Image (tube, rainbow, N blue to C red; front, side, top):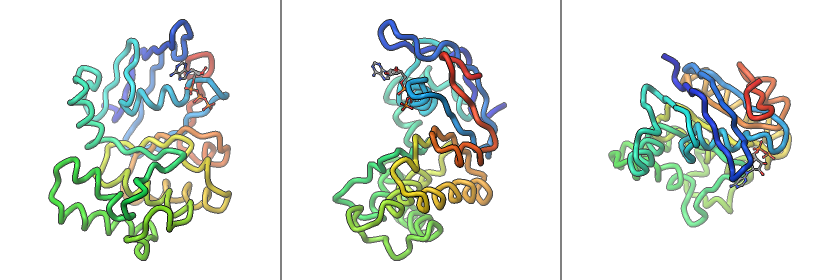
Length: 218
Ligand SMILES: Nc1ncnc2c1ncn2[C@@H]1O[C@H](COP(=O)(O)OP(=O)(O)OP(=O)(O)O)[C@@H](O)[C@H]1O
């Protein structure tokens, strides 16, 4: 069975049909990019695949779970424990240090505090941030903040990390570093990534590119 599978996902906003029947399957360890014109529905699809939004109809299975059968509370828990997110703007909490930001989803999941801290330190170390543990987001560069967001996405060992324009706010050097990082994490940890991007270099590096056009995957 695929790690993620959708059947006939449909989503409209009022009378505007955005997704008209999305069928796709993602295998473990794949890095998949999602591309398409502005307004094509990339973010809408990513939010549904990431369980942040529900479709009007259709099914989504992640890791064997029929996720939209769950109520909102069950789904929030599933999302926290099984899914990681990296957004264009890192959404780090400004009053918390890098280490605290990375630990938070682990604490929310009710995991052992010491274990969470240890894993967060290891992740930050792996991502080249060992000397930034106690820095606030405002005391870090854009690239460092985004790598902290990646560490936060990984803290609960998610089945899938979803990224929406993850390098959209970075200069080309930091963007390239971030792209390399995704592939290093895939190679070293077998981490699966689904990435919405306008960045052609990143889309071209992916194992597979899905293009959305007229509400369907081409
Ligand atoms: N909450 C909403 N209410 C109404 N319409 C929406 C809403 N969110 C998105 N849309 C519309 O749905 C369509 C798809 O939007 P979406 O953000 O998914 O596109 P996108 O491919 O990610 O675009 P971009 O590349 O510009 O970020 C657009 O026409 C958009 O205006």
